Length: 207
Image (cartoon, rainbow, N blue to C red; front, side, top):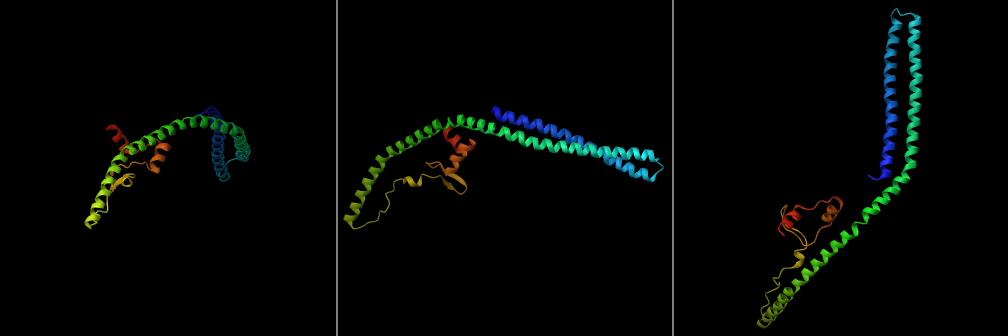
C-alpha cells in the first residue's frame, strides 16, 4: 500500500471510530429513554407521587435533548468525513499514478521476452519448411505421374498441415493435443491472474 493510500485509510478509520463511538452512545441513550418511557407509563397507573413522575419525565426530556445533540454530531461528522476524504483524494490519485507508473515499467521487458519466444517459434517453423518443400516436390512429381497415366487419385499431400496444429485439439472434454498458439483467454488469464493451464507445468517438467 502506498503512503497516500495509507494516510487515506488511517483517516477513514479515525473518522469511522469517532462516528461509531457517538452511535454507540446514541443507542445507549435511546435504550435508556425507552426504559424510562415504560417506567413513566407504569407510574401513571401506580401510586407514584407527582414529584417522582415529574423526575422521570424530566429525565426523558433531557435524554431527548441529548439524543438530538448526538445525532447532530454524527451528521456533522459524516459530512466532515466526506469533505476531508475528498481533500485527500487528489493525493491518493497522484500516489496511485506514481505507483502504477513504476509497476508498468516492468512490463516492456516481459513483452520483449514474449516477442523473443515468438521469433524462436517462427524460426523453428522455418526449419520445418525444408521438409514441407521436399514433400511438396514429391507431391508435384506424383501428380505428374498420375497425369501421364490418366489416373488422378491423389488430392492431398499427406504432409502435416500446420493449420491443424495451431489450436488445441480436444477429444470430448479432454485436451488431446496442445496447440502451437496461445489463446486470448490463456493470455489474459496469465497476464491478469498469474494462472496458466495445467499442461504448462506438465510440459515444462518434461524439458
